[in-house]
Image (cartoon, rainbow, N blue to C red; front, top):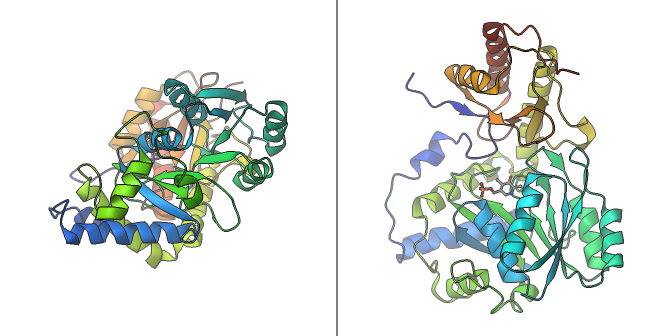
Length: 372
Ligand SMILES: *Cc1c(COP(=O)(O)O)cnc(C)c1O
């Protein structure tokens, strides 16, 4: 069928027609019209975190990881020492990129099915005063667990440590308020809960911190200080901007505001999440996480225990019915993931559950219940 499948993934995700249509125009990267799109977008992004007074937002070409890497390179001096509480795959990625850039990183392992404890972070900061920064993954997309941003931010503030937040999969859906939660940098991207297309990230950086960051980055392309200074002087991106991605994100943010901003987006995702887990529970599926630690962004389900289950076949059969699922990211248990984000609502979620029921029948699997 000549119709796009619904993406039940954590990005790229299903976008509206209006967002797609915003890409049907060629922009000159030096042109005042495009500079105005960039400037307007930056202001509206700052409004989402109430950060106009305290922060700047610096966009960067590339996928979200590029911006995480850029934030670490720009904020952490080469002699810095970063604590990375680790309860999943994106935490491990942040630790790895930090080490690859020759910054010292200490990984603090935490169980994958539990949030990071702010008290444990505090104990680690007390035990090792050489730590200068903490990296926190707000929603660990590897499992879907929500980590306690406000509590960890308070601990970092109390101990005078810098905080870099990877809010890639939570930004614009979960509440983040720069007036009450103190962070030095917070990273998000175009193709997640703002429902733009992938291709750029952006980093909110505390103004007072950015001023101290000149020369930290060992990379030209990843230097957010340089990108910000250049943008301030010229209104332009330093290097070729992803013009169509910027235009699409600008249109996506306009729709976000029209929908009612973050509270409305969270309400829609909550409704998607409830529809999904209730429907899947009726089919016997069990989520990997306890509901109280689960963010309504992406749900990890245990794979069915039935011997006929095979993820590739399950995926292909769901795809044939118009729904793209996501593989699991856990090493110990077999799982798959289903995203609740994107320009979809409870109707699409009900249809997705129907499709999964149909797939189970086709595969001869009587229940989605996990093995023991
Ligand atoms: C999506 C995501 C990223 C970035 O991943 P890319 O594949 O580089 O876009 C980083 N951290 C988290 C928590 C994410 O969900």
